[in-house]
Length: 182
Image (cartoon, rainbow, N blue to C red):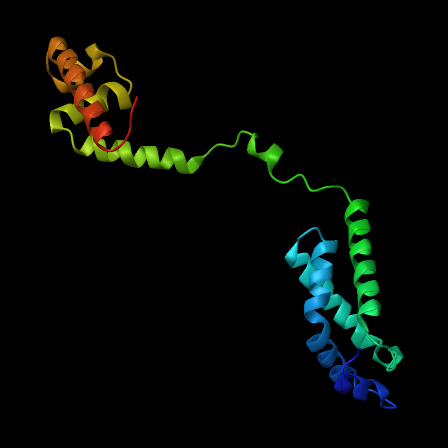
């Protein structure tokens, strides 16, 4: 049975829609929400939206509500049920969103990863001795042969070979210390 206060607002010749809706909300919000949660298969957010839309429609129809009705819950439940049905039809009418599935497998160059590698390698190179840094700079970074590096640096070819070997070992250790493996 409708509470006396709600009936009072509905019986007025021109009911104040805002007072009617606030009284409706106080009286029917919880049972209506429980009903709509079942209609929406437990989706509480959707249910809250449906209850809110139901109250908006009640506000728009305040003058048409029956003040003599034992309960307005049937009217509210019917409106809420129709809103849920309309929402489902609207969802079914448009194609399903696919999410990021196909995009996850699309190859995209990750420039951040490359930048991080450069920073880590740069820091590891700084940890090397000047002689090791210099030999790696000439042979690997400038892509010079052992003979060309020996001429450029003015050292024997054998020394270039051994420095490259020991510089690479030291670089590998410096990278491992920074979390880079393989």
